[in-house]
Amino acid sequence: MTMSDYTVTLRNAVPADAPAGAAMHRNCWREAYADIADPTLLSARLADVGRWLSSWQQHLESGSPRILAEIDGEIIGFAAAGPSRDPEPPVPDELYAVYVREYWYGSGVAQALLEAVLGGKPASLWVLEDNARARAFYARNGFVADGAREWYAGLGAWEVRMVRGGAD
Image (cartoon, rainbow, N blue to C red; front, side):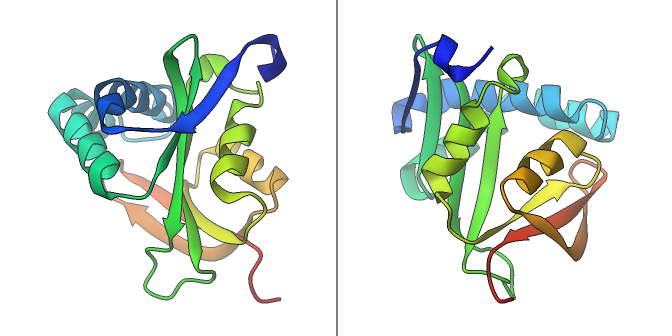
C-alpha cells in the first residue's frame, strides 16, 4: 500500500482537532513503543487521557504548528518542527515529532509529513534508541546519530539525538 492508493490530505491542525489528534497520538505511542518502553510507564502515560488532550490543546493554541495527515476525515498522523529545545543545539531547528498510525507504516505518509514540516533543512531530533524502525527512517532522510544520549524517564528508555546538516 502506498499514499497513491488513497487520497491523503496534509493540512495545518486547528484547535478543534485536539480531541482527534490526542487520540491518534496516544494510539501511535501504543503501537510504536509497546515493545521498547517500560510497559508500566507506557501504560500509565497512555491511561492519562486528560493529559493528552490538554497537551494537544496547548500546542494547537500556542505551540509550533502541527501538520496533520488525514484520509477520509480520519487523522492518521502528524508532524511538528520548530526551534531546537537543546541548550547547545547542533543546528537551529528540531523535528519534534513524526507519528503515523501503524497501518500506514511504509505508505509514504511519514515521508510526506517530514517534508511538509522540514523540507530539506538541517535539523536535529530525539528518538528512542531501540526504535529501529524510526531510526532507519531518519537515516534514509540524512539524519545521523551525533553521540548525544539521554535517559527518557517518562518511558524508561534511552533516547539518542540524530542530526541532519549543520557544520561539517
